[in-house]
Structure formats: C-alpha cells, structure tokens
Amino acid sequence: MGLSRRAFLMTAMGAAARLATGQQRQPNIILINADDLGYGDLGCYGSSLETPNIDQMAAEGIRMRHFYAASPVCSPSRAALMTGRYPTRVNIPLVLGPTDDGGIPDSEMTMPQVLKSAGYATALIGKWHLGSQQKYLPTNRGFDEFYGLPYSADMWPRPLMRNADVVEQPANIDMLTRRFTDQAVQYITRMKDTPFFLYFAHTAPHLPLGASPTFKVKSGGGLYADVVKELDWSVGQVLQTVKANGLDNNTLVSSPAITDRGGRVVPDACGDAKARLTKAACANRWSPAFPA
Image (cartoon, rainbow, N blue to C red; front, top):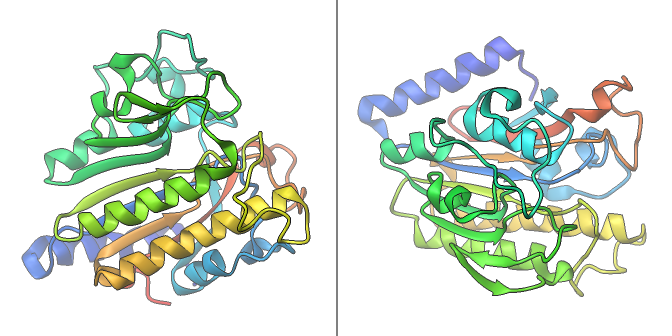
C-alpha cells in the first residue's frame, strides 16, 4: 500500500480517534527491531533474500520508503526511538559500553512510561543498549518485564537477563532469535486480555552472526541469509500468534524498525551513499488503520 506521509498520519489518527470513542479497547503495539538489517535486504525492498512473512506484512499494510533512524549506531538510535528526542539531547551521542555509567536520564520520559500511564502492560524482549548499570536497565525505564541482552551481542561478557537477573553468560548467539521469539509468543498469549506494548528488539543481524540449527546452512545464501531467514520466521510467528489470540484487528505491528547500513545484499538500495547509514526498512500492519 502506498501512502504519503500526510495520508499515513491522517489514517493513523483517524483510527486512534475511533478507538478513543470507545469502539474498542486501546490497540496493542508490537515494535519489532532488527539490528543492522539493511534497507535492501528484504524481498519487499528488492532483495534476492526470501522474506515472505515480512513481504506479506508489507502487502497487507504500509511499506515505508523514507524511514530513517536518528543515528547510524546502536545506543543513540535507540535513545531517539525510546524518547522521541535527538540522541544528544538525552546525553547519549555515542555507543554505550558494558562498563559505562550512562543511560537514559531520569528526567526523560520514555515510550513505555507514557504507555504505562495510559494503562498498558510493557515488555522488552531482546537488545536494550541504553545503559547496563542497574539504575538504567529497562525495568527502571518503564518496562514491566525484560528478557534479553543489556547491550550488543559483540560486547563481553554478553549476559542474557530476565529483568535484573543473569540467566546465562555468555549467551548462546545461535539461539538468541529462537529464544526471543519463544518469549514474544508467550508474552502475547499471556497478555491477550490486556492492552500491551511489546518492544521486540532482535540482536541480529548485527555481528557476530548466529542462527539456530533449524536455519543454519539452510538458506543457500550463506550465514547472513540464514540469519535473515530466521528473522523473517520470527515475524511470522508473531503475526500467527496475534491472529490465533483474536488480536489481529486491534494490534499495530511495526517491523523491522531500526537501523542501518543500507544493505548487504543490495548495497545501493537506498540510492544515496549518505542515506545508507540511517535509512531503514519498515513495514506497518494494522487492519483498521491500514487496509491492504
């Protein structure tokens, strides 16, 4: 579906207004983020890689062609996503390391905090990278639940955490997408009767690459293609779970929604060398707001 930016905003606001009048409960929001997935690495953006679930999602909703991250690197781009402000204004201009004593300041309001005040349950599954010290962890920045890594998978000691507890260290790279997906499916099913915001932030396909045995050496295009194929499977699992729980007409799913690097399969997909650093693929699906 093709919409101008103005038409997109008007459509979304119209749907939100209809919900606000009491026709339905607040819509669920699932924001799926793939780390370092290139603009040109999805089938619906011209890639030779097979991504049928994301392609179908784009066909049933809206495929963004001018969607940009606020920064080409992890922490600043996520700071902007969570606060709606430029990274420098929240004092996260650079990537945070495992030992850095920094994160989103208490003075900033985050997306999950805003949604919690509106009655939403909130969860982060996957990569945070906005402060690994206790006071900056997701459960202290608006999320009720957290299962994932506090920073990038290429940083050591790579703990897999549930809320503030380490459950595995170092985390098994090959199994992260599978584990995150299982957790996301369980969360959606468990919260089906409550408005929820799920921020599902994959560590892949950021280096180091890893895929579960089901997908490794199965794509025929090398390990990167295996990783993308598993990410597409993950999106399919989320969509199937939404449908199976009767949430299809009341759930906005946005995927993949961050960054960067243009594309490994179609490097010039963005058409502009400068845009390759921040232009990202993004598909949005919500039947009442964005009819196919």
